[in-house]
Image (tube, rainbow, N blue to C red; front, top):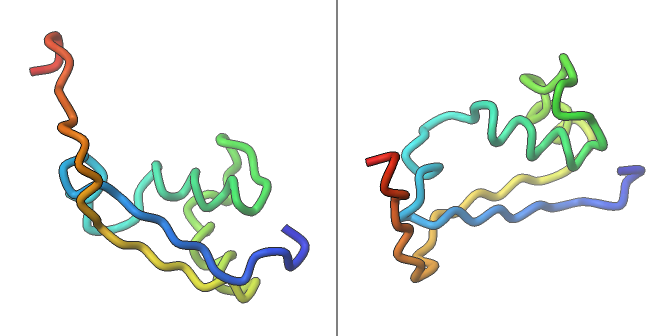
Length: 77
């Protein structure tokens, strides 16, 4: 990252599965870890939010209407 980011905006579609989560879990940890250059199996991932904040990166997360119908595959209903 080397100070290249100062703000990250993440937008989740309100009709998708991720907005139903109220706290960061594996999906967001991996996303934030990726911004830090960490691998998906890095033991530091649960601390990735704090690591970004400590690096001075402002994290903004919004839930938006992306207009995608998000169909559930037949085998997963």
